[in-house]
Amino acid sequence: MRRLLACLLCACALPAIAAAHVLDQYLQVAQIALAPGGVRVELRLIPGAQVAERVFALIDVDGDGKVSPAEEQIYAQRVLQDLALVVDGRRTPLVLTGVQCPLRREMKEGLGAIRLELAAEASLGTAGKHQLSFRNDHRPELGVYLVNALVPTTEAIKITGQQRDTLQHSLQIDFRVLSAEARAWPRWIGMLLFGLCLALLLSQWKRLHSFFRRFEAEQIKAKKIFS
Image (cartoon, rainbow, N blue to C red; front, side, top):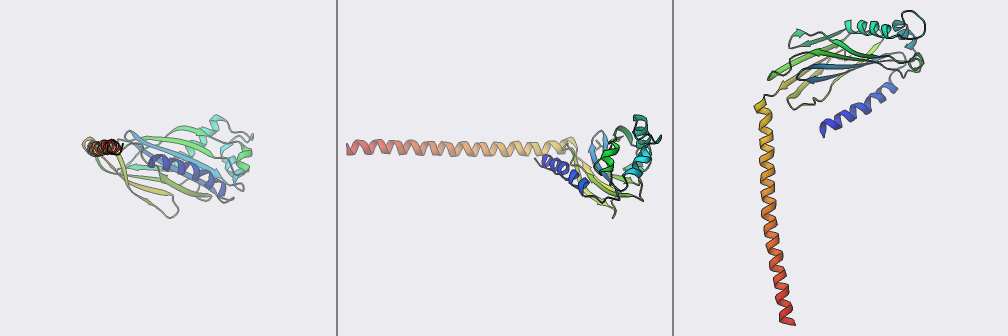
């Protein structure tokens, strides 16, 4: 339930942030997801209406007023060069897995978001404490930054701390990976508590059942006496 609520809050908050950001700034929102097999980063780049043409010109290399798939890839790789991901002290390369650019009209209205899907292979399945650092230095003369870690979708990973710099260029995530035994222990506790609650419920049910049977017998006896 908490994971679902967190996802819903993120989904609702992002459009509100996009709609409210300053017209002459380049809003860059990064969301980082941890999984045993690696790291996923979703980066949304939202130029304000007053800088939209400037940003669009960076993407539209041939100046024909349209963004081709090749131009999307070129710009995405340029952004990728300005990102840094470090896992447990080791520089970990991010790979572009998807890119989507809005229409020029959408950008000029301050509503279009450039979306980059990124992934990095990292062994996050080893039990113990880990640390991840992410930094975004794309277009600092225009950019304002937001960065957050998503709630892990697996019980194996527990985020224990997050630290951002003042401008949110960077985020450091401290997290812990639980061993299989540690993950199994809460399940046994849950099963035990469920069994105890069920036993208590059954015992009370038997007492209530006996009470109502005695009450019914007394009612039948009283009717015989007064009849």
